Amino acid sequence: MENHRGRHHVVIVGGGFAGLQAARKLKRAPVDVTVLDRYNHHLFQPLLYQVATAVLSPGDISAPIRRILRSRNTTVLLAEVQSVDLARNVVVSDGGEIPYDTLVLAMGATHSYFGHPEWAGFAPGLKTIDDARDIRERVLLAFEAAERETDPERQRDWLTFVIIGAGPTGVELAGALAYMTRHVLPRDFRRADTSRARILLLEGLPRVLNTYPEELSEKARRDLETLGVEVCTGTLVTGVDDSGVTVGDTRIQARTVLWSAGVAASPVARTLGVPLDKAGRVKVTPRLNVPGHEDVFVIGDLASVVQDGKPVPGIAPAAMQMGRYVAKSIRQRLAGRLVAPFRYHDKGSFAVIGRGSAIGVLYDKVRLSGKPAWLMWLGIHITFLIGFRNKVAVMFDWAYTYLTKRQDVRLITGLHANRLPPLQPETLPGGSEARAGEPGTGLERHEPSLVH
Figure 1 (tube, one colour):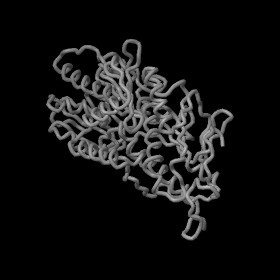
Figure 2 (cartoon, rainbow, N blue to C red; figure 1 turned 30 degrees about the horizontal axis):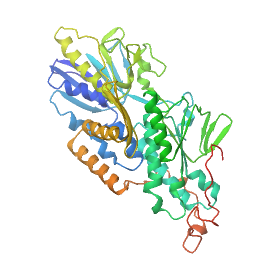
Figure 3 (cartoon, rainbow, N blue to C red; figure 1 turned 90 degrees about the vertical axis):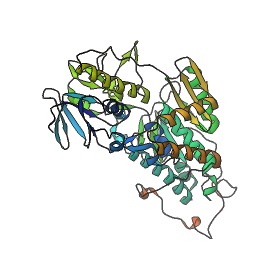
Figure 4 (cartoon, rainbow, N blue to C red; figure 1 turned 30 degrees about the vertical axis):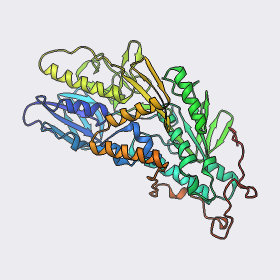
């Protein structure tokens, strides 16, 4: 791709929070910008778990990149970047080579299974809309399978959900699933008593939401347990398969396992030939450059940034600040000036546990929990959503769900239809129609335990 106007050519790889901010802040700069992404949409990842749990539709939290970046100096291309040749100043994509004068890498992160890639097929993570649809289908099909099942042991397996990793995504998934099983679905099924579903949240560290202050972490744990989630900390998973997970010598039978335990940077980082951290992120300079390459910036989840001896968190506000900083840096460099090193300003972070329950920290000083934190979380997420239509749609869906206790985006599209057990005569009209849990059905409630 040639720059026919002879202007400075900035290539931005990734249309997430970091890349989008950089591109938007360059729309009036004397440069030509090319944005590359393997998807045609920007995704608001913090609300992806609500797509996975049937609260929101995918379109409510996404927007076309082309619509967002309509400035005259910006070109958007659908392309998957495979590597970067720093010596030749080219990006290698599935559509060919793209030269750059300045490169901004903002591809984000993917799932990390800690050396066990074979677990991915049994325990999907949550990073894309496809992941959310996959998880939503697995969860909904588990209830459908439990409705078909006549054997009480197998039905319990279908009604057991294991979430590995108690960071924000794991906690939010666990809380949302607990609410769904106890307040949304019970009247929709005849044989499967969804209110008795087991939601297990497994965490290898001593506490949930480990990056938050200890008292807020403990508050989150209590709120999860009030919702019915079984929280197991200091628990290291040693095996995952299609029928459950193994924790040391303990076996947990579960037909639905979800992964939120770790992330790894995009594999493109390895093609740069520069130092990486344990998660595969680039160890950037204080000005977010690749060491030895002032014309290459790395931002967002792909960048390993240390500030005051602590890593800058991989959250949306940090990525957005990096994107704005890089745009300013490019402008200043073209004008012959040097900007000060990047400085992350922590305005706070929040994690929602369930309906009316959240925890959060503002400006590293003010600590919130309960409904005030939940209301703050709602406002922040509405503010950060891109597009008036998305803001209105999400506000309406949240109000509808809150007032009616209904989650109607429960679509099964056939991704995992082969997971359903065969129909049994007892599940058909004229068979045993007694509700699960009633005496004499063989489906009486068993007290929960870690091992079946």
